[in-house]
Image (cartoon, rainbow, N blue to C red; front, side):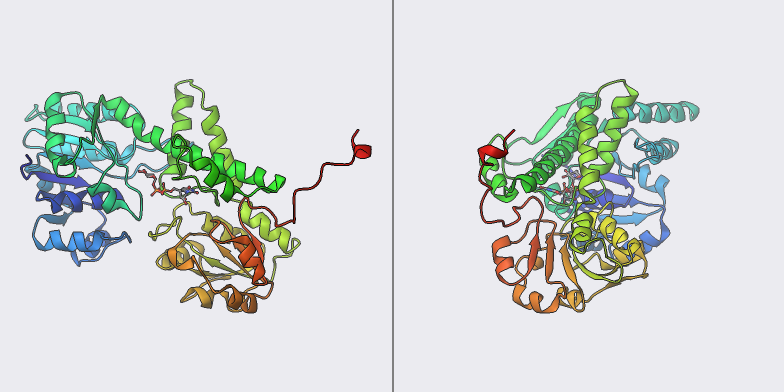
Length: 459
Ligand code: UDX
């Protein structure tokens, strides 16, 4: 059974907030620590710094119940904690490696103020070996203080999908725990018991393997996407339809349907960064990262694909054109634009002298902040974005973009062209409405495969 614990979560960012709110919701007392005053002010006023479905009610409910507290007072938060989660950022360094400075800093802060035995749980995505460095920092600090208590370190990577994070936390497909001590494993097992009801989802291992599991998972996901994107480009050349191919391949349970969509390249705060970090890690240890290197290269190429399609369609003359872009977030159900392919595309269009009218259900303000207003504006709704535009590009598969009025669009869009980066639409139907249609990896709509060349032309 589970007993309510006192917890501190350092870093009230995306992962920290979801973790803190969910753990409070099952009865624990949670202090969320952040040093960003503006962020704390928002949170204390009942506002979220990010958009994440379900998180607002969760935070409100638990804050009102007094189980979830936002503070910048780390020593007070740590003072009576049974476990402290480190959920600070690990941004890419210039060379692609993950910068674990904030993790080590947080660990030092915890050790400086701990007054009783506790478990330090590293949730941030960190290179293999980071927990060992955390332990060194902690032990040095405790030794300096004359060892007033014992702190142990565990790894517990998160597998939260943005836009689905609360659900992923509450109904996890797996909970990975890396420990060096059975007691630490028992503490985490008790903490996660509410989410571990029907069958055991806890996967316990050594610390380094747990750290590695997170990178391996994201490498696998990124590889799937890049492989599909590479196949999509080939499908286009040979006049095959990647959507049909996806259905035909995904039916094999060893392959599966999920996460098999060609598109504008993977983005977000995890996949690009984690692939980079893993390549750097391999480099550091003199191991090969051939596949990972290609995964990354394919993704970079894919991110320019939509721009190239537009450039070709407008015969290189994008200056003076107005392009409508539906979807600015890197994926639906989030306002996150970090490494979003849409932001890349719009930047390129603006540099080529085009104007862009964007629309996104929630990410408009973030996009405006990132791109500025020079040639870029945000429309109030999807239709308004197309008014006066030459062509439409759909960059994110928000549900509200699934079945637009194509006949209306054929009237509105001056060049009558739709570019579908997510293969949301049936090419034949869109074309039947009088629009030029291009997806990713979709047959050009030529009548039939070319006949084999006549014998005379074969050398
Ligand atoms: C990811 C992992 O899924 C999650 O387990 C990890 O903890 C954090 O990183 P997230 O960044 O929220 O989650 O996004 P995800 O849904 O994985 O999508 C990543 C990117 O891949 C997005 O840009 C998405 O559009 C793209 N994608 C995804 C595709 O292009 N095709 C697909 O089939 C799936």
